[in-house]
Amino acid sequence: AYITSRSELLDFFNTTLNMNLTKIEQTATGAVACQLADIMFPKSVPMSRVSWEAKTPPEYVSNYKLLQAAFSKNKVQRYVDVDKLIRAKYQDNLEFCQWLKAFYDQVASPLREGYDPVAVRQRGKGGKKMPPQFQPRGGAVVRAAAAKKARSAGAAAAARTSTTTRTSTT
Picture 1 (cartoon, rainbow, N blue to C red):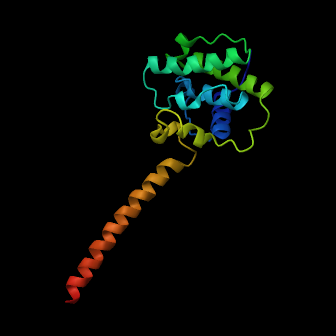
Picture 2: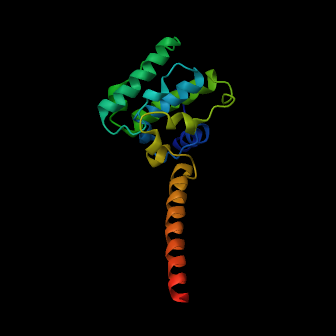
Picture 3: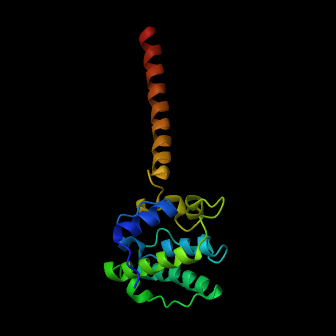
């Protein structure tokens, strides 16, 4: 048995992958497991095919197929009960995440030099507009979009102010 608490697992995923998971059930899409496999076994998971915006069981299954192919390619003998995991039930996903972390701790060297987990996710399906739980901690993707919106709103306000200023001085 691999005993790791829910909070330890969430902290591990959030720190290692620079994301904002708040519930174990958010790992049910298989995308998080694919990214950990990508760190452990470089070039084994075609990360551009991982769907970060997966919302339905068939989309989750596609992610798990990528994971299983990576496991097979690297001779990892672990049965992944996809039917259970895609239901997003806490206990099933907790147990898989506990195993995944223990396996990562055994196999992975420290985070690969130059590996940018956010950039890797952004190249995947839905990576440009990924759900909040997969965005960087602190919401860098959200903050960048908000800053762009604020800049354009600020420019529009400045244009209005300059027009108002010109008309009021004439």
